[in-house]
Amino acid sequence: MHLQLVARGLHLKDSSKEYVIKKLNKINRLLNKNITVKCEIINKKSKIGVSDYFQIEVSLALPKAYIKIEERGEDILALVDKIEPILKKQIQKYKGKNYSYRHKRKFSEAMLLG
Image 1: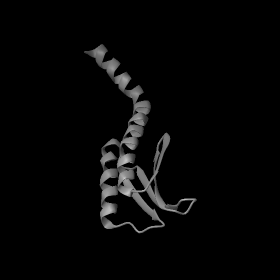
Image 2: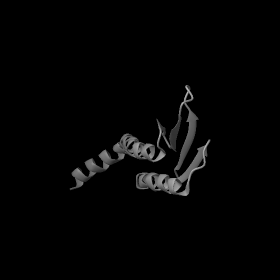
Image 3: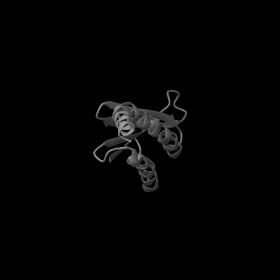
Image 4: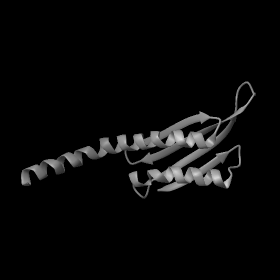
């Protein structure tokens, strides 16, 4: 897995970068080695102009699908914690749809042989 980390409108601290990389590397075992994961962290101003908020976009280009997850909030680390289980669920859903045919065939062959 190749991870592209992009920050727009802000400068990420090293501790924040390491945290994001650590959390997104947990999904590495669910993916093939040649998948690119793009994570964009954007600092946006609210329309009222009272406070800033962050938006995190994580996108994966898989062979038969494209997964994109967006979250908005005031804390980057909390947003990363929010995105991780959603991303795992989407990848497992993708793998279930695309790999179920092969597993069913192998299971039925195993039942006939054994």
